[in-house]
Image 1: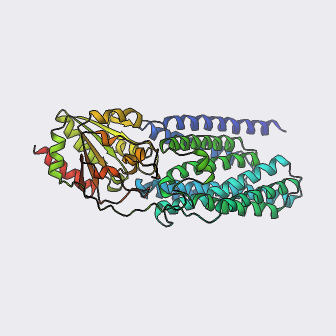
Image 2 (image 1 turned 30 degrees about the horizontal axis):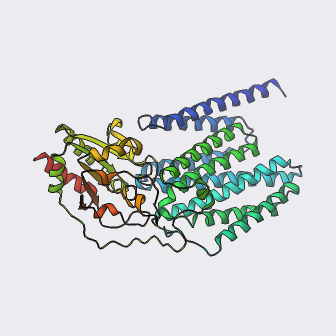
Image 3 (image 1 turned 30 degrees about the vertical axis):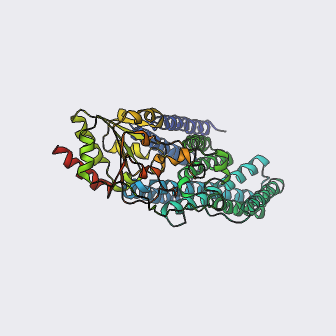
Length: 467
């Protein structure tokens, strides 16, 4: 090996080390809304460095395909970032997870075909990593698209429970294992495509039985899978950067999944095996209740808030849909001018993705020290005069504590029902994404303010100014 070649390899590896450091720093800064944007920028720079180092560090015979791919991908990414609403961000993440898994599977497929066509002896460790990349990538691809379909309403959000589904899944797992062993012992495209086809089917069968309310957890897990598939592809290609980046995504996705399963009182094993959600025979009915509720108008809500000493805002998916974060901050500032204590209660899975509410409120310049997570805020509700729930549903439902038959039973919730008074802003009496009615609606202390959240908050703000 010439001195020039050694120098070239060293420069590439140094670039990979620099990119790895930037990835790690970027992930670290994503842990706080105050530094998240900077973390995104660092990670983007890291990816650019990694891509450039990989391209310049290899003998490229056809630049047209690479430049064309970069151009197309950049255009799609830029348009997606600008056009996709925050309420649809989970769907976008699901799609990107699926494409990430697909990319890993396609690369591994190409490498296997190249090795077979060249007549090379394929080492067993390479065969195993190729199969790992294709299997995990295939499950990620179809599973992510089913998750996207459920969130987008293209696929029924209720669990679709197939007859003897566990038997089918076990049979497919055994068949996939046999095909993998076959490939390792005697490499052939037949065994490879059998295992890949089974992986695609399993991605569908694992996600279909999961209820729509649990899709954010599924997306976090599939994000982890896409990283694992990428790391496996890194081993196939002998690319250290891909191994590191894939491992970071896989580990962070798994940690996020664990946080979310804890917040929703779910079992990680059940998530991974596609067995959680409502049980067999339960359809998660979303019919509206006919029990009486107390309804108020904006002027009544304004009076309650103006004469309170402490207020906690509880944002949810309804706030995101209405894009009411700026109006809520304006109302909050007005209340603080009157000497009223204001805080925000953020449930880990409020909205449709972790950090959804934090990002929206940070966009409206809500002070970070006013954003309190579940553990910080829950003991304060009983000392709070008014809790204002804006579009949050399942995460405030007292049935999670009391109704063992409920699909959300055992899920940690915000103790909104312990506040002295509750203002619940909703468009209608419809149930949350879990498909169960919120018992908070029917408490004597709860006042329902029906209508668009943005419009309702604007009306309340105008009334408070006159008091």
